[in-house]
Length: 481
Image 1 (tube, rainbow, N blue to C red):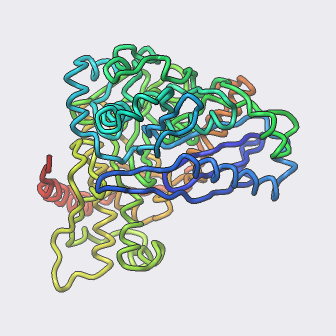
Image 2 (cartoon, rainbow, N blue to C red):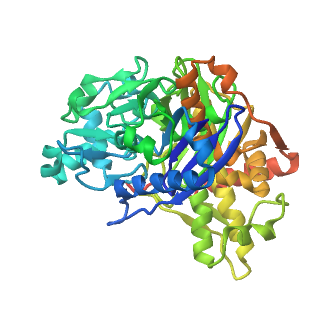
Image 3 (tube, helix red, strand yellow):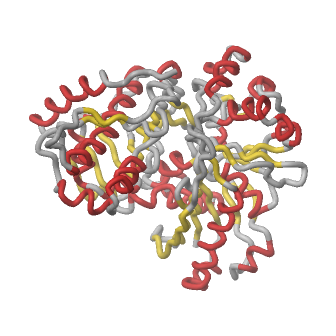
C-alpha cells in the first residue's frame, strides 16, 4: 500500500493506492487563502498540517487495515511558496504563495544583481517564484528576514512536520530560482543574490528517491505497522506528469486546476525564459519539463459561479457537450495577473463585447474560451523553444467538462484526451513516487499511461472561427506595468 498526499492551493487530497495501482480510498479537505492587500496571496502553514492530518485520520477510520500496510508515502504540492522558519523551525509569517504578485520590483533587482539567472535556472525572474519573495521580505520585513533560518516550499514544510527533516526534491526546487537546472543542485550564486546560503536550504533528492521516514509517533497515530518511507516527491505539475505516465518526450499534457499549464517533458533543457516559459526538473532523473503557465484556469469558472450565485455544474449544464460557434463575448482570464507569455502580475481580467442581449451562457462560454486562448499563448511560446504539441492529455478538475475539452481541441487545433482518473493526477503521481522509493522498480514499469477514455477532435469549421477570434482576443491585452 502507498499514500499520495497532494498539498494544493484550494485543498489537500490524500489517496490510498494498492499494489495494483488502484485508488482504493481518497480524502480531501479544503484550504483557505488570505489576500491582506490587492495582489497578495498567503496561507497559514498550520492549516496545511491540520488538513493533511484530517485526511489521514479519516482514512484510518474508514480503511484502517489498508492504511496500516502503507510502506511508502509520496508528497506533491503547490510550487513556489515561501515558508520562512525560525531557529526552532516555526513559521515566522504566513506563506507567500505562487500567485502572489507583490515582488515585481524585486524581480528586476534580482536579474540586475545576478545576470546569469536565466541561463542558470532556465527561467525568468517572476513574482510567482520564491527567490523574489525573499528580496521583498528583506526590504519590507527585515526583522523576519533576519530571523529566517530555513526557507521551505509548502510540501517540504509538510515533510518536516511528518519526518523532522528538511528535504526537498529537485522538481519543486527548480521553481524557486535558486536551482541550477542542468546540474540539479542549488546555485550558490543564486542564493547569494538573495542574501542566503545553502545553510538556509533543505537537502535535495530526486523525486523517486527515498528521502526519510515518517515519525514513529505519527506512524502509531495512524496504526501503521512500521514507519513508511517518504519519497522525494514532486511539485504538483511534475507529480501530475508522473500520475499520467508523462515521463518521456512527446507526452504533452494540460493541467486545468486552480491555475493552468501546458507541459511537455523533455530529455534536454529547451528554455524560453524571454517568453516566460518555465523550466523545471522532472520528478524522474535525467528529464525536465518545459511549461507555459497561466495563473487562473478552473479558478475562473469558480469565480463565475460565485458571480452568478450558482454551482459550477449549473453554469456548465446549458452549454452541452460542444460549442457551435465562439461566444460573442471575450474574456481575459487574468484574475490574478499572468505568467506565460506576458509576465504581468498587475494585469486583470476583462469581459469584452457585452450587450443587452448577452446572457449568462455566453459569459460562461467566454470564460472557458478565455482560458483556452491563454493556453494557446502557452503553446506558441513552447513552439518558439522548438516544442511542437501534436496532441495533449488533460488532468485536473477542469477535465470533467466535455464542453471545455472540445473548446480546447478547437482552439489549439490538436486532439485532446480525457483520461481515466485524470482528476487525481498529482496525488496519484505522488503515490507512484512513494512506491518507487520503496521498491526501486524501473520507472517506466510503474509510471504507465492511464486509459484514454474519450478523445476530442478539432472541427475544421470551428478551428478557423477560433483562430480568427484568438487574433482579436490577443488585441485586448494591455500591459499595466
